[in-house]
Length: 341
Image (cartoon, rainbow, N blue to C red; front, side, top):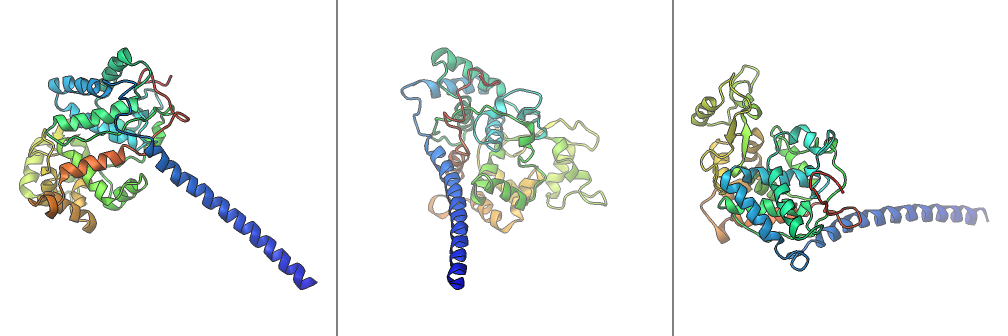
């Protein structure tokens, strides 16, 4: 009887253990499937009935701003990227406030907010309360690349706007000081792989940055005050002319000096030749895994023999713009993009 009683206790304990294990597995499954379901809520032509001119209105708005200032393109692209990497692609980066995402250090200097506000005002006049700010941002990013002689792609829409924006949540955005390992982890945390990482950083082909963020590579990179040895000698001279040691740290410099306003693969050739502005970009050449992707984009081979950056970029953008999208349950369609309803 004692043996049977002990066995019964063991069976009960095993049942409790299995019950807890199954419960944990169910929760994990719900979380994983939840993300997949959310991304599947997006679809091409989401506004085809509710607001048929939505995409054309966003396009014309971006185009009008681009015509007066072509540098707005990288600004809009960066705005969308920073939005998606913090709480998902929910337009939370557009919300203003002392403690909102815009106040975070990585978000200082964000550009293109006025373009999104302009597009939203035009859409509200035609289709009030229909098109989300998050979708406007995703569409504007696509249009800005297309206007810069880059690729175009169909943007799945149907995102809802988030109701929360916190500067503290933006502290983990990718940094120009990040090692490749850190960059990989930050992208992996968002469901993006190494191929996506290299491809999306190719957006720097039309990007800009301040002297402040890379001048340390020119003068104080080592303890002896030498320059970063990964910078090619001729390019180093060029950079020192653009950013003298005691010059204006806010001076803007193109991240792709060869073709600063054209969306092309020259950015990857810069990495190969030691002509990258940001240390985090140049490091992609020294890592075995990222190096393989960079070499394929920098190669003259195309199609079956090599990656087509223009094609791969559109695919990576669709993937990124699906990160943790909001639904009707946890989101809304803002009337004004800079504040919740």
